[in-house]
Image (cartoon, rainbow, N blue to C red; front, top):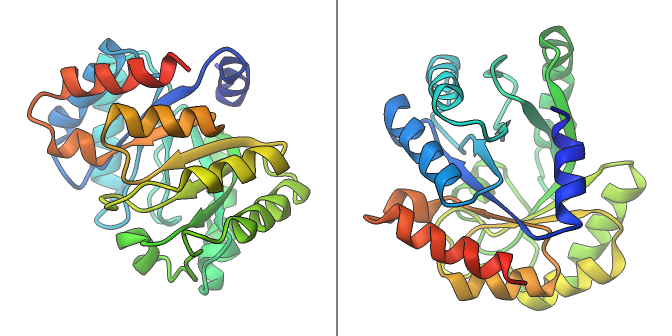
Length: 246
């Protein structure tokens, strides 16, 4: 499966949903259960990764268990080059464009590139920016956070990513953020960019997902709702149904 083609083709028909699972938050078996639940309620792919605590061991065990129980594409959402699983279907080859740490912009990518080539993993070239409040990912990534009311700056970063040849642009509010990416920022990016627009962080409710899909998000990512919900199937089913209606 060419995962990038899958994303590009499917977004022409509907807004995609991807669930983000952090291997550091639960056992591989529990992660597999979450991946299976995502498939059952109509999600389009599983992202695996987190801001801290990712090791080669827990990443590999988690991905192998996911592959055992689901046919959804498994995409690695990397933190650094120190842990790259050969079992994933693809990896975001991403640059945190608004990081003050050069390693987040290009250093880790230089280290990881030869390993990715050796393993033969599909790459999904992506520009990644962190918007206020940023949460743990903003802190760990030393992000110069984009203000929530500065849609122009988000667009400028997106244009830079587009002109560098990246296929995907990810607006990240941070896992556990009290508020998702503002609708107006999404609208501005959709109007001015010719890229696949991914939006994540702070999206917990169906109406939040729907508004961001209506604003132009091609992919909605949810993660915290997977960790916090006591009734994952019901919550996710409602959220995914809401964005698929757009």
